[in-house]
Length: 266
Length: 154
Image (cartoon, rainbow over all chains, first blue to last red; front, side, top):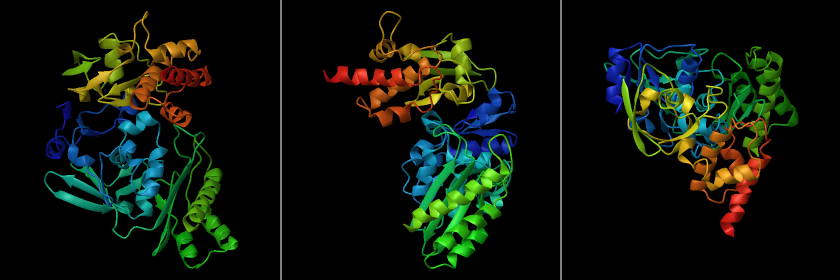
């Protein structure tokens, strides 16, 4: 087997069980870059573009094959906002949320939203059926996940009790076609505030100390908002690389988190 | 493996050796040199084609995954003597300088106009945000859309 264009999920899972080394191809926006630049040559690949089951979508369960173009109008505001900042129209027409999860880049624009809402990743294999994994267990490092060789990412699920307010923003060097330097989702609702960030740690992360601090405030004062931003900047674990520096990412994380919290509270 | 697909309305077959992109197959195997190979990582848009109704970067499409697909390349629009109105407007308004991005801009622009014959400037800028032009500063390209909009209403 070199390439199988799976017609449905069962065919994809059978192919993956028989060829655990095979790579799934969804929108191609990550895999083909690696192939074109000769960084990587898959032994075999399984195309998912025609698998309708992966494009199913409700408010609380998003199929892995749903494209960014579709997510631009998703009812979850922060997810729609994130979708609109991914790549370009060409990239958004092809790239999928499942691909973002599978690639597990620290800069994946969909990942802070999953972390902020405590989403789970729905995995499936031919022999063991469905396995649902909390995002914290799924993302284990830079471009590393806890997926098993015979599994496919089928969907993202989020809990029913969704927060009333949610906002996404990212920092990058230009407006369109840009990979995040820092990305952030803040949610606010009856259960309090959550803060999730991307591009500032090996995996998407929650700023849990900042959450605890701000959740103790009824009506956050100017001083409380400044302290919230300071704690976010302290909690993130960024590195210096070709896209930015550790210190700028720390600063940006605090600024973004505070700005988004203020939007949620307004 | 052999892949059968429709390109610019004509059935074609291509022999695929591995995981090469649709762009490589269009250019190297089928002799369709309109789609340009520049960045090969989906950043520049100069290889934009319409794949099953969506504008995508042909460099990011695995050719092996194109069985039964419908592809429209820049070669579908106009000939050297008889240009598509958008191509003529690009020429008249100096939306072309070095020309490397032009095929991608033509494919993206015509697809936008097919879906939305009277786009706003914001909609045009958004549609072209994945087509990088380093020569024109986009002024001439935007004027080409303006000209078509005016001609369309006259």
